[in-house]
Length: 323
Image (cartoon, helix red, strand yellow):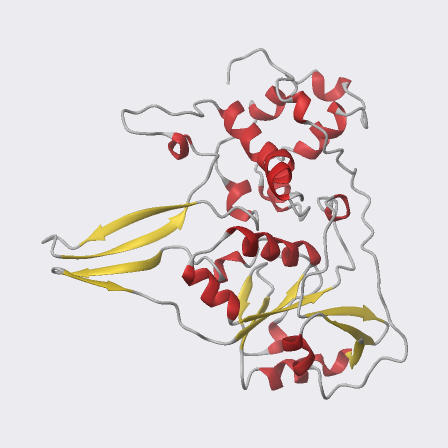
């Protein structure tokens, strides 16, 4: 079933929802933010950063200590809608749903409705059509001429569009982007020296993991008052691209080299998660490629390894230098 909404009525539709829900949507700074005015939305392109901060907020307080008293904190149970997520971001939420069993996450997720929008203009970094994405939404908006055709994916979504007219025809569109399609059968290429070409350029800045919608690794840390009587226990993002991530007591780092850390990122997304869960952890949003300062393109490397692209140009960058 599909419903129809005229594009010029979208802002009014969102305003009506604001009476019962907190609305989160893409804005002009390239982020998802809580909005008060629908005219501030920017729906023309994918956001620079994903919406995962609304499920796993940075620096979230888990426990408060007041003397000998321990107070467990709980997230606000606001009903909210995240509007404007692309299919890649919707699939990222599905991946998070499958692996995160934390009660704070589950509480936020239970109170969040996902309203996606079809991606009309994927850019040169997108490769979502390579990653076997699935339908996962409460509502999905398909722009077509002067209307949105709205596919209903859940009972929650159905209630939100109950007053809208039904479509006389159904519009289902396929995302078309022309970035090379990675061949994911790369497990046998783990020790290929071509990975050194990418790792030698890597800055270990963690921009890839910060901007990845399915990177959810975290660390727990305490902040104490000067008298050590009060404090908070917090959760913050961690990154496999930092040497400290695999460092244990005594100073041993199990992924001491940039090469090992870089390959961990790629192989976790493409190989390891797939073997355990039957789907890729990467959703093809391309944010890791956009955010990378030296513009390392690991999908290019995969295509070279699997014979989909000429080897020579990249192979010439490979250095025997230890990384």
